[in-house]
Amino acid sequence: PAPAGWRPAPAPAVSLRHDRVRDADLLVLPERVVVLRGSAARILRLCDGARDLDAIVAELTSRFPGAPVAEDVPAFLGRMRTEGWVR
Image (cartoon, rainbow, N blue to C red; front, side):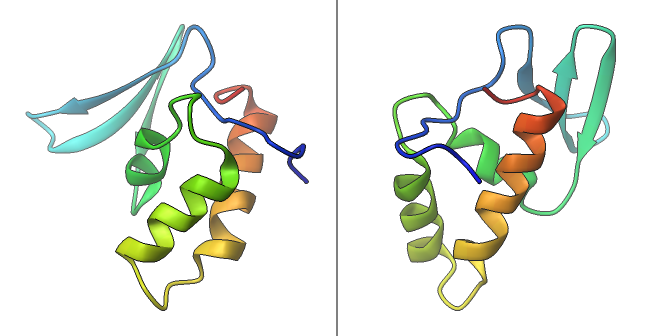
């Protein structure tokens, strides 16, 4: 589980980019590029270090009513944190 008050942000050497040629969102890491699928980029764009996890979930819940945001987003961001891509 995420720590209380966690404000997710990209790890220092990680950036989110959109590749126009491939029309794909990418997570650019020091020696690797990860192609993001589905709503991953939408979620990661909200991880600016200013919003806490609850605010990110609230924002996405308002944008996508009925979606399982409250369960899926914390789990997804937890995996991103485990990988070291989000701090």
